[in-house]
Length: 144
Image (cartoon, rainbow, N blue to C red; front, side, top):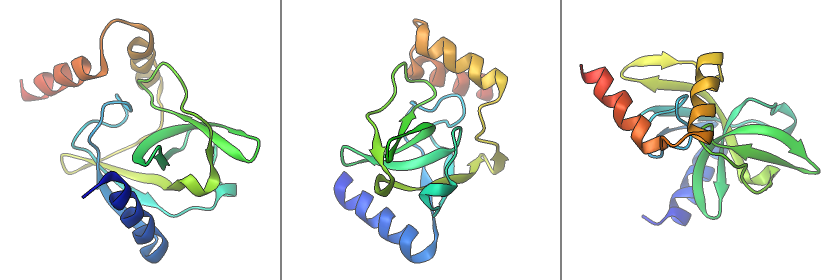
């Protein structure tokens, strides 16, 4: 299935049922979201979004879970926690919903940006350690 078809399907599922579960594939939201985590995305109105929310957006035809940084004009600015730069501004209709729950290995994980996650995100944004490298180290540590 193409990314465009998948984003259309997810968008329709959220509109019809109010929520959808998706598996995280990328590393841009480390340390809050890891590859393999399952997120519950729930429909929300644009006036309900606030800075710090993790939202599911359609960006350049791709489904992306990123943190909402701020409102800008009639749209919003988002960024992955591990990304050094913000995404291009998105319109309200590009935001499919808010991540309300994160499941990791059968446990609920809080997606808020706590101070340890904020520190780790800063290291990823500014340091030489790539998000994929950190993801590998985290997986190895959990296996040990």
